[in-house]
Length: 272
Image 1: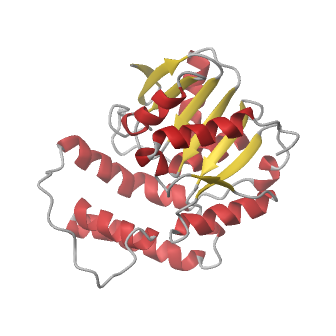
Image 2: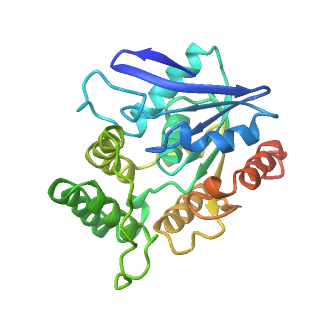
């Protein structure tokens, strides 16, 4: 567990295990959220996890500095350079999947296999203009009513809450920490818009040595990331690959999820 000093801040990361290098990346999810999955993979891979820029332990010199997939990709390349890792595999989840697509496009040859699990690329959808409005409304909700209300609006929009008329869940005794509030502010003010509006560079992605697999949760049919994942796979002219659970299946089923990642990474590229 250590940090890398960057020109505009620092990047917190963890390394565990032995074997080929595998980067696990999320946004806004942190290294801590991926720890059980990383532990389940560490017998076969040198697993690198991290806190994305501006989140948790990866503080920026200017808290209002920009973020986005390209900057997150740049940070990861700086980290891999520091660790003297030339090529690596990558599992990116949600915003981390978008980071992975940006990294493959901007740094050709660095990634052997990218598993982009449910990238929320809302610009690929036929109703992208409506999704832009929805995203702006979520951000406005954050500024006017706080993080709790904004996360609620986000969960409804993404499809995690399917019945708008259902009674709200009972109030939680959990009071967000100062860091959790800061991470929420970072997400709504700097990451949400930049991630969902990212347009993948399809020409570069289809003319690369990197094998790109679009992962899709077997229980994600009700989520907007099901639609975006299918749309991205169609642009690559490749089928999606099923993974246990839904958008965050690795949280509840880390061992099974690790097995699915392992099966992708050991598969013969000529067959897939």
